Image (tube, rainbow, N blue to C red; front, side):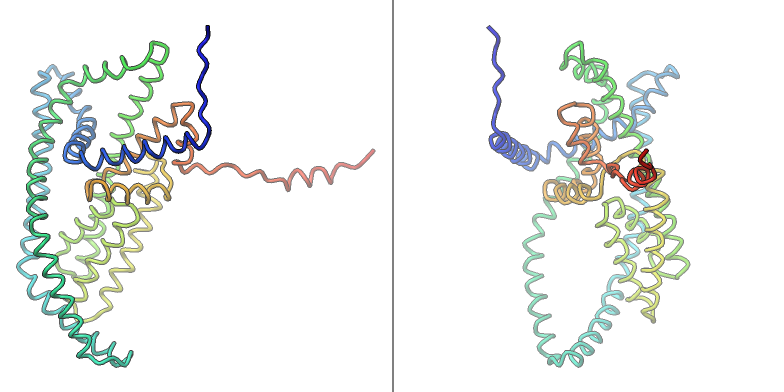
Amino acid sequence: MKSEEIKFPFYAKITIFIIGLIGLLAILYIAQSIIVPLVFAVIIAVLLSPVVNFLVQKRINRIVSIVIALLLTFIFIAGFGVLLFSQASRFTESWPQLVEKFTEIFNDGIIWASGYLDIDPEKIHLWIIKSQGEIVNKSTAAVGQIILGIGTFVMIAFLVPLYIFLILYYRPILHDFIHRLFKEDHQSQVSEVVTQIKNVIQRYLIGLIAETGIVAALQITTLFALGIEYAILLGIIGALLNLIPYIGGLVAVALPMIVALATKTSAWYAIYVLVIYYIIQLIDNNYIVPYIVASKVKINALFSIIVVFVGNALWGIPGMFLSIPLLAIIKLIFDHVESLKPWGFVLGDTMPQILNIEPILKKLKSIQPS
C-alpha cells in the first residue's frame, strides 16, 4: 500500500513558515554569545584554509601549519589594532579642544536659529540643559551594559582563535559529516555546493579586505590633502564603516565633516570633504565593488538593506558585518535546491528580460498579404 503524500493548504504552509522563522530568529538572538563567535570562526577558518593547505603541501605538520596561519593572522590584527589605538589616543587628547570649538559653533547656530525662527534663545538653552541631564542619566544606566559588552568581547577574543584551530584541525571530519547527511545520489551536488560556498567566502572576504584598503587609502589621502586632523584614524574608521552597506557610508562621511567644522576656520572644508567622499563612493560603487566584491556575491540592494537591519537587531554591530556573507551563503544553497530556487532568484540582482514586442510588430507589418 503506497503512502499518500500529505498536502497542506497555502495558509497552513505560510503559518508554519512564519512560526518556524520566528523560532529561528529567537534562537539566533538568545544564543548569540555562542553563535556569533562560532560564525566568525567558521568564516575566518575558511579564509585561512588555503594557507594551511599550502603549508601542509610543503610537508609542514598540520598542527604547526594551523598555528603558523593563526600567528600570522594575530600579527596582522595586532598591528592594525596598535595603529588604530595610537591614533585614537591622539584623538582623545585633543577631544576637549574639539568639544570647546564645536560648542562655540553650536552656540552660534542657536543664535542664528533663534533670530530666524523667532524663538527665545533662553528657551533653547533650557531645552539643551534638560536634554543633557536625560542623556547623562541614560549614559549612567548604559555603563553596566558597556562593561558587559567589554567582557563579552574579551571572551570572544579568546574563543574565536580556539574555534578556528579546532575547525581547521577537524575539517576532514566536518567535511565527511556534511556528505554523510545526504544520500549517495546527491553526493556530487553536495560537493559542488560545499566547494562553491567555500570559494564564495574566500573570494568575498579577500574582496572586502582589498576594498577596505583601497577606500582607506583614498580617504586618508583626501583628508591629508585638505589638512584635516586625525586623517589616518578617520580614514580607517570610514573604510570599516563602508563595509556596512548603504548605512555605513553616511556615518563615514559625517565624522570627518564634524572634525572639519570643529578644527577649520571655514565651513567650506566640510563641503570639500562631502564632495570628495561622494566621488570616492562613486568610484567604490562603480569600479571597486563590481570588479572586486559584488562579482562574487550577487545580492540585490533591497535584501542587502533588510538583512543589515535584521543582523543589527539580532547581533548588534557584528551582525551588520556578518549579514551579507551569510545571506550570500543562503542564496547559494537556495540556487542549488530545486524547490528553493525561486527564493534564490528573488535574493539576487539578475533582472528578468522584458519581452520587447516592437520588433515583432514591425516584422508583422512588413509582411504583405499575398
